[in-house]
Length: 310
Image (cartoon, rainbow, N blue to C red; front, side, top):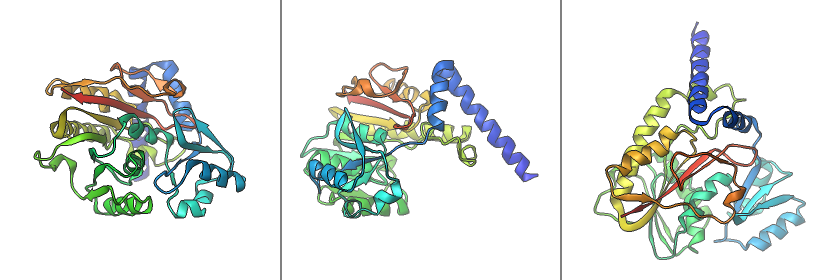
């Protein structure tokens, strides 16, 4: 009996997703998104320039007959052609933190953020630490990064990765709900990679997908995102910028959240500039200057906005 009701719920959730995407994007984009959901995503990694030289790593990979291709928007992001995640995790360069397995989409926010040495930077939902350590690498370990994580186990994972990537001299891990950060603090840049429904990363071949992806999750995520973004703009210094990102492609978790907050806070959208942006598989957005990446065989679905406090 329970199985039947589980199946019914899963089918309802499946229908919910389809109708919300159809309403937002229309038939042609819906087809692209579902094709992306069905794709086996390539294994991708980031060369950790805190610990390694990018050319050395590329040479080492070639010597091990590991085939890779590069992307136009970053010289440290690699798409691996002939190895699995597990095989890469057995390499010494993975063990000692010279490479970090990370999705291409999640490498975009830190690059778009353009963090600088000596800045006070906040990563509001930092675990497991891919973006945190990328910010550390982009600033040559010379920024002051506060990485927040509420969950005890995830905070431990974050500390582990920060140490493994050699970023512990510039990253302070704070186990705390970012919504409760004291307003006394202020930051030059903030990354809010907000908790979300994960609608950009769904795997339609996994039977459990629609157990977890529910209208309730979308609603809960939206509420959290709204309060996090309000807090972020509160503790961002005037004239400075923050990045808001999610691995969702639903406007109710992205543009709608930003529009709500922009009605109450003096802030503006800064159009995203990224060399190589034209090579990203982009979906239409409701807010000019923001980007939404379509899921495909290389990318997870991902939304990114840059906001300046006025």
